[in-house]
Structures are given as C-alpha cells and as structure tokens.
Image (cartoon, rainbow, N blue to C red; front, side, top):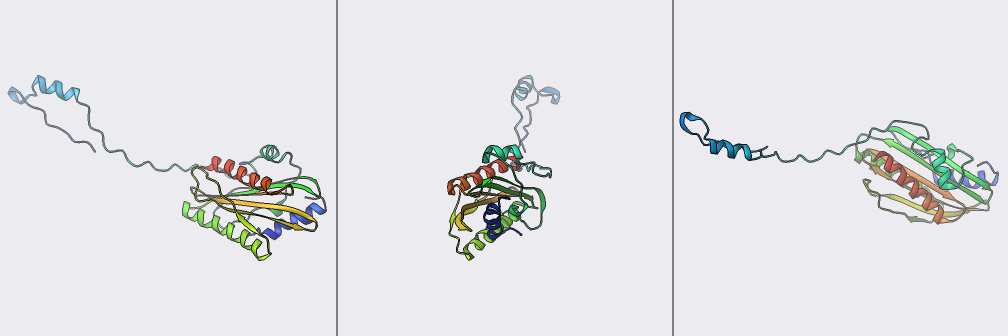
Length: 223
C-alpha cells in the first residue's frame, strides 16, 4: 500500500497552500390386464408432480470491467463536491495484489482555505475473505499512520447492503495554516475491495459525507 495520511496531508496542506491542488413417485392402481384403472389414471393426472427441494441460491458476482475513473465519473464527483478542477494521484488509495478495477481521485480547489476532494479504489480478489483482509490493511495503515502523528481518529460506520463490516474513521488536523478533515471508509463487497476517501477544509461533516456517499455509490456498482 502506498497511501498514508501524511501523503494526503501534503496534498491538502502544501498543495492547497500552493494552490495546485428430489420428488417421490407413486404407483398407480391397476385394472384388468394390468392397465391402470380409469379412476387411478384420473387421480394421477390431477396430482401435481412433487418438486425437488430448492437449492440454496448461489451468490451472483458481477463481472465488473476494469476502467479509468469509470465507476465514479467526473460529472458524478462534480455533483458531489460542487465542482472538479483537478485530479491528483497523490490522493490515490494504494492496495496490495488483486486485479485493479478502477482507481481515481477528484479535487475541487477554490482557494487556499477551500479545498474538497474524493478518492477511491476498487480491486477484485479471489474471495470475499481476501477482499475484507485487504480492506483491513488499508484501514490499519491509514488510521495507524494518523495515530503515529498525533492525529485524533474517530470511528466512522454506516450500514451498506451486501457489504461486509464497514471499516473507517476520520480525523481533523491543522497543517501549514490549513485545517482539514480526511475520512476513509472501506470493506469488501463480495470479492471486491471498495475503499473511499473524502477530504474537506469545510469541516468533518462534509468529509464524512463525501466518503460515505462515494462508498455507497461504488458498492452499488459492484454489488
């Protein structure tokens, strides 16, 4: 994994400051000559054939094609953020292994003290268990790194249909005169790891809303 909260801090702090940012069968009664009696034949014809027990449904996994900023388009991001005027790879969420389906980031930079952004990663693994383990790694690295730098982190959860336990948190920090909040959420949706990040200089609520809205949109695309 390559992303760390300090890397995001560089983008949100330095970049903002620089403004760059089976059935049973029955035997019929027989009549003379071994032929079924008419009554028995009628009864057999009327009786519906028993059905085999229904098999447990097999979960259907979507085969999501790989793309480049396709699962959440620039126009989607502009609707969420208000505008999009930058893409910055420094905000990309790094993952280990698997098949990368999509990875992208969007920024809305209106000024040194007015910066908002989102970033996401969707990676397919061989199983739901592996995808969840990798989501745990993303959370541990990002939030662990924040704790190492005295960045207070609070938990962030929300129910998402078809997804595993949601892992996430958010924290607010002032760096180089810029106060910003970063929120990150992620888990597995079947064999897909889905991770989303929201960032804002306009308060924690916006960052959390960005991350959760983006995550829910992505999980609906792959789930």
